[in-house]
Length: 187
Ligand code: GAR
Image (cartoon, rainbow, N blue to C red):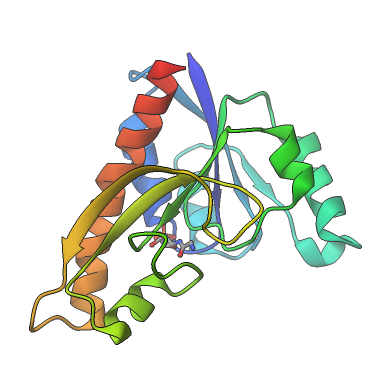
């Protein structure tokens, strides 16, 4: 059995997709915990409802990012991979060095285009006809680590941000769990 920790900050639809695929442990992958940097984020309720242990870290309670990350490292159970599913923070060396090549992130655009917090909006505003979803290893940059998997999503003529975002999220909900499973099966 492999195990993962999911990191998330907000809605948690990707947490829910990972939970749907791995929650019964039948796949050989166990969700050991969910780490959140906002105690009142909707993803916290989703994790609790699913019986997944929640580690909440309020970065403002710590003197530095390194101290907050050290608290996360200390609180984490043994896991094979950290899966960032909408975790809206740049990781520092404390977490990166504790899990070398074992942290993956989901991004709602085709990197290296449109990194950052607003990948869907930025791609839409630029006017690209194709955008998509990326899963990549995390390094010290902003959405800059080695790409593992990508899937394109066409921008349709009548798309709004909302209709485009809905199709991107649907792709995310398949691509992230599948990629995590493939990586851990190869491990
Ligand atoms: C997802 O679209 C994910 O790709 C994005 O945050 C959203 C979280 O949604 N991440 C980034 O933009 C990282 N740069 P969720 O909370 O419903 O899973």
